[in-house]
Length: 67
Image (tube, rainbow, N blue to C red; front, side, top):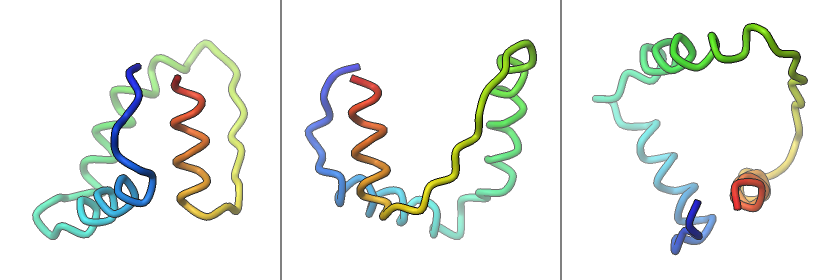
């Protein structure tokens, strides 16, 4: 994955605007997303880790992990 030119606060604002858009049905989109993604995880064991960090820290960690 190529480095993204956008800064974390910019990405966060874009995500917030997208999710707050009344024309986007986020619940239906989430269900569709899970229907596509979840079958790939059926035969594997994964851990769900819930963390209490500011969004910008989480986005920065995700960006670093994808490099």
